[in-house]
Image (cartoon, rainbow, N blue to C red; front, top):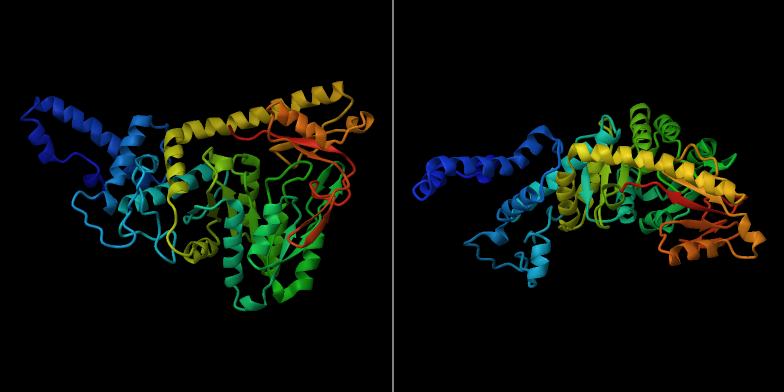
Length: 452
């Protein structure tokens, strides 16, 4: 049925053949149909295309999907309050006239009756993002993947609210155990969900900050029926290492405790994805949340919720808890980008990122040696690295000034951390804020070898 909607039919070929030689029309129709059968292959194979598609093919497909939405029907008469009306031609072009959004009130993954094209696009975007994560190393990823038009923080809030509601005694469940990661978003995601946060500070092991699994176990026992879940993080600033999600997953399985993984920009790391896959294979993982912009090179504003095949109920619960219809922008960006990349380019980007990490580590070590500094040893972090800034004290300057100097020279993304800062976030006071540890002994700056 889809292929008939998206291909040139025999009657049209016959009609056009009265104007131009039939063999040329047939040849042209075959080319047209080859372009428009792309969606059929994606849905049938449940994979992104092997090779990226040219811009012309993607644009054509977007217009084909657009005319399947009711606001673009030739004879449509809209008499409701929401009929896909767009005033600005620039805005209409930006979204390919896909104005209805996705989902229905109460389920962001449901079909939208007025927007068949948008619904197909949203499902195809979810299918391709699932395949991209599988390629990155998430083996046995569940069939249900939810693409939400919210960045990572708000998506985590949705996941935590759905996790809380999944317990029979939901009203008594008021707390989460959170492995400390000094980003305000992580804290606000939980407080916005109306939950209390029990902070587990990582253990300092050499230069590296690692998961304190024993402390998590003690707090699980103490909180008992009040606990909603444990929140771990896999992508973070050095010297913090990715959390030991496998050990935590085993602990949560043993104690019947929920487990949510914040994998904000971890899809780009095969090492991290394989750890997550192992975690949901040997233990309990209820949901994994990742950013679209940090992993797939699209504008900010989307996140993906997934899980392993053993436990997919929370992903579905998040979808059905979304209030109202949703913007299609995140799905549109993801759909276009993954079609443009294809599997071949996606794998090349993953390879290039690993090469960049090795190159950055090598070159940063050279600079550190020249300046009497050192690169912190953080083998548990495959994306971020850090270099000490002990020279700042000798020069009589604040270490944070180094970050300002870099930014004024158009070097963005570095993070400078100095011991001693105390900050209150969400009503919680954090000593040594920025370092993810109360008493980290070094001043340092971070740099990430990220995708792109």
